[in-house]
Image (tube, helix red, strand yellow):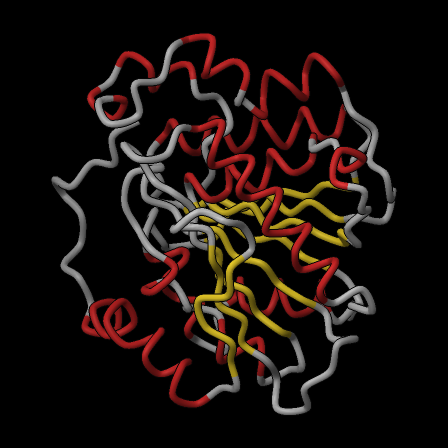
Length: 277
């Protein structure tokens, strides 16, 4: 599942700008709590950005960054903060232990505990919406199958935004991307949302919970295939799911452009959270 570089269009100036400045701008212009621990581990912390009218009853959008579980950081992933907080949505950017320090099992467990923390800290929230990009979409998708009873909490999950995600991990086992992960086939199957959902066909706790599976027009064929197949599996399982292929964006543009208020995905996310038609 390598993302091809050859033949890609020249990087537009706004892309470079968004990568380097989005988080700095969000931290400078929005009320926030930074590096909040959700667990005992060094890497187990998150940033919370609040709308102007701070309220524990706000909806929360929780974001998991991508990077093939071995790169990326919450400290450079605040793409959606300004557009969403401007509309009354609190945004949480989650850090997790990437490989080689972290294993897939640990990352999934950390994602689970970050959501548990938000629910316990803000029990009056108006809904928790999970958003993930690439490997982060994998972590978000695994939350569809989480056993929340182990944590003595039922998070108020209202929606999922799965952007250019990886849902079948088995093909990665045999690629160079698996070097830092040291993932076995057993690991891939235990942490593969596609296989787990096919086997369990887990029914949604809340039938109104909307799962939006998104892929870019210029994503690689493998990302497109996995996204479509995961969407079809969700539909067979009775989930309230929809699929969108976004025009004229690649694997990176699709998430970087969340810095823009009028970007189609920004508007999709806001309509879902604000329950607008």
